[in-house]
Length: 68
Image 1 (cartoon, rainbow, N blue to C red):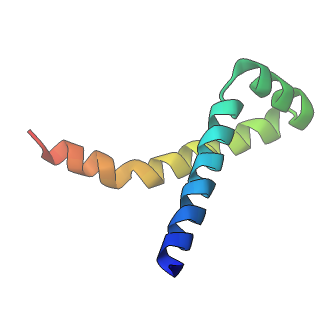
Image 2: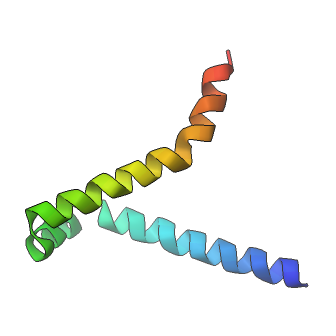
Image 3: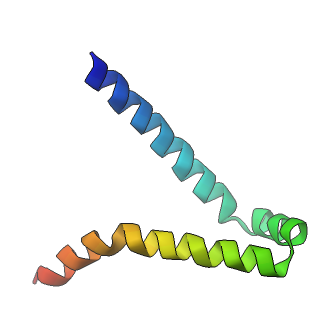
């Protein structure tokens, strides 16, 4: 039962993170964040988010490169 609860919590957190990422990719949200944070802070956060995405995706990209 504990494993089911952990899986459910992870699924909910994953869905919440996915929804937040989709929301932040909209033009209106990006414009508001840019105005709120300023150019330097916004670009620094954007670079770190892209780096995190690259770090999380490297195993998948590695396996895709090995496949014919």
